[in-house]
Amino acid sequence: MSDRLDKTFNITPEVVPEEKTEVIKKEKPDRLTKDDITRDYEYTRGNLYSIIEKGQEAIDGILEIAQESEMPRAYEVAGQLIKSVSDATDKLIDLQKKLKDVNEEQVVKGPSTVNNSLFVGSTADLAKLIKSETLKKTE
Image (cartoon, rainbow, N blue to C red; front, top):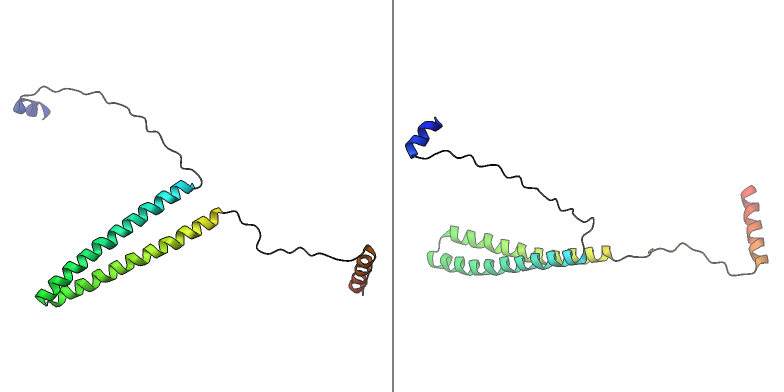
């Protein structure tokens, strides 16, 4: 069949050698760096701002159409659009909270509860205390 196509299109077949390409896998770091987190935060924040601004423009446009046409469907679409923009603004606030949580995780914290007790007294007082405690346990 390929012979007929070669004659039909008046071409000569040519074999092109296959080129081998080596894929280099990039290893992911175990932990995100502060630069990665900051870059992701700024990118997400910028996208959310863009979505909110475009949503505001769309709301203005659909409300104008709804008022001119007085069609219930146009008002329904406007309501859905308002809800979507509202959800995007909520996501913007949630983004702030998530960034704060990530930053707090990266900060090394000490223990929040200290269970060390301190005895203030002489060695004789300590000996009496230990002796009385051991007598209570044996009884």
